[in-house]
Length: 312
Image 1: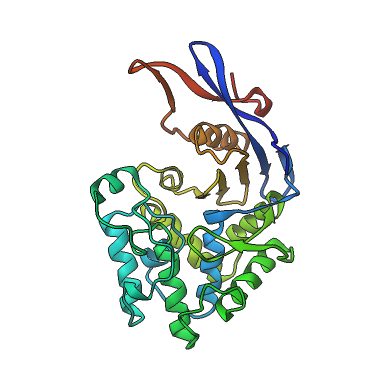
Image 2: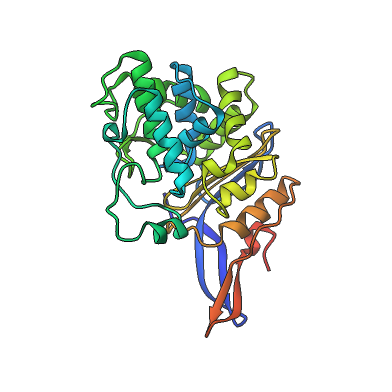
């Protein structure tokens, strides 16, 4: 995949200081392209942006959770006390404790939560993927599948997840890597990711409806206070999920879909890009603007490139 096109410009005192390039696809509810920038057909790693698809495979395989718990399975959570308690409750419900988690230990993802964590050691429970891994373990318990090997691509759980990806994306999974948390990671093009998320949001399948409803009804569980996916879903009209290395998916309830991948992996300017992209789908949202500071004073801003048609 090439570097794409300039999507965001960092303006300092009226001059472009930096740019962020990437790949962006906006499609209407029928899958018609409204805007395509960069390379949307080569595979990328969607990272955590597609956790709702993984969760759908778990529910289809017998995972039974409350909406709040299910939302956390779809989450890259900030690591608040509530997030950790809900993750722990999923494990307890399956007769397990946090020692069963095989995800990579980490300190909380949220800035405030990480500061509050202080000098305590990183744990698997405090890592942002602990809800997903707790859900994976609970699914294994429900099916009497092996717990120690649940991260292996050949494990029955991961095979069910691959089936769910292929069903929704209509593409065969051919490239598998390892995500930061240690779970299998499947490569898909931006076009295929957009199709999968649109099919997920528009699906009449009770499994898919249960997963999406859980996220939209519990937006803080999916991310955290003040974080972009939560802010977007608090409107009640959108489903949104970010992923590491600058990946984002946003979907309207009717199926209009926005998918992007920043080439430098940056999340800077995501609020601005979300607002501009949603306006193309006829959705207006008001999000905090990113400021460029100099000497503690605002001297600039991050703006969407003119290529998108909504920049300055």
